[in-house]
Each structure stands twice: as C-alpha cells, then as structure tokens.
Image (cartoon, rainbow, N blue to C red; front, side, top):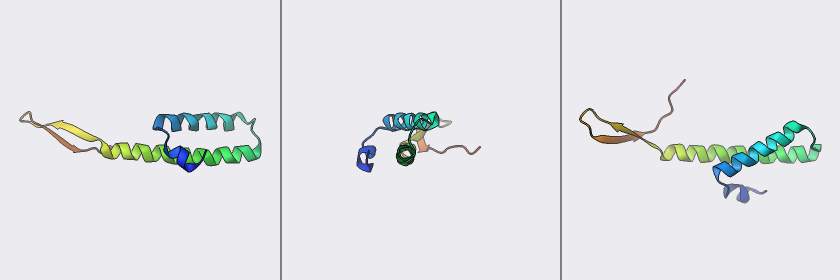
Length: 81
C-alpha cells in the first residue's frame, strides 16, 4: 500500500489495518523481509492516524454555558495530567 492509498483511508480503516499488522508481527510467523515491510507500513499508518486525530482535535470546540445562560464556544484543550 502506497502513501496515496493510505491518505484516502478513514481513521477507523487505518487503525484496523494497523492493528492487523501488529497482530501479524506479534505472531512471529512472518518472514523477516515481510516483517520489515509490514513495520514500515505500520509506521505510515500510525502517522496517518495521529494526523487525523490532530485534525479532528483542531475542529472541535468546547461549548460552555455562561452564568447568564447564554452559550458560547471556546477552543478545545486537552487537560494536562
């Protein structure tokens, strides 16, 4: 699968493919050359998933209700642990 094909995948499809690759690699029944190629594809899929999550995060706004009852939006932020 090339980079252009990866880009057209939905987040869910990319994650599913990534999970399948991880299972194959963990199974240990894959030839070394195939394992290296699978690992490279997994890295691309991981990056794609991260990019899609970051893009979604930028689109999300937090809806807040003010004391006077009016609604307003603010930028979504992830609380730090």
